[in-house]
Length: 139
Image (cartoon, rainbow, N blue to C red; front, side, top):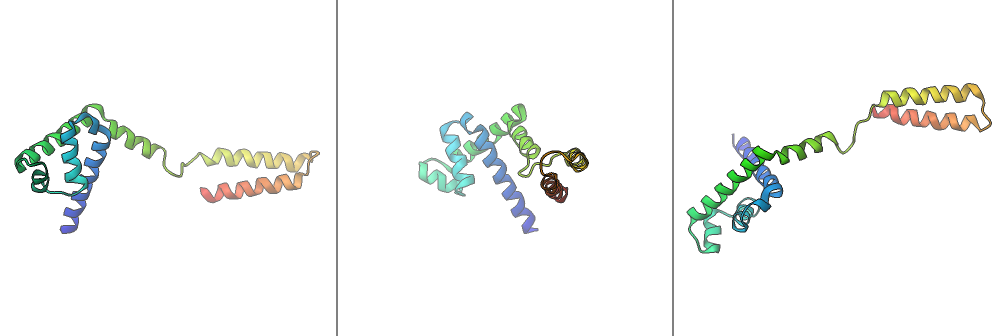
């Protein structure tokens, strides 16, 4: 049960950090600083209040208003969702349509092997075989 609470808390912190990165400049400097201190530095409302010599309630209100504002911005603009979509659309190892490439390389190999062009076809065929092998292992 505690693990799920910890996961939810972490997910919330990640969400706020992402919102802050995208929409932080739309907040007041004070709101941005309070949200950063609370979520990134893990300071309590009381600790932030003490540092800024204001009430705990003022810090709480500023952080909650900033979070709500960033959620409204995201709801209207959807910039965070779009950047997340781009990240998913272009993964670190981008899958490509291998089958057409493999078919084309197989055709070229067949032509080279049968035509006996001027060049050293054996080395070309071996090179294409190596490319095919590499592509086939990525499927």
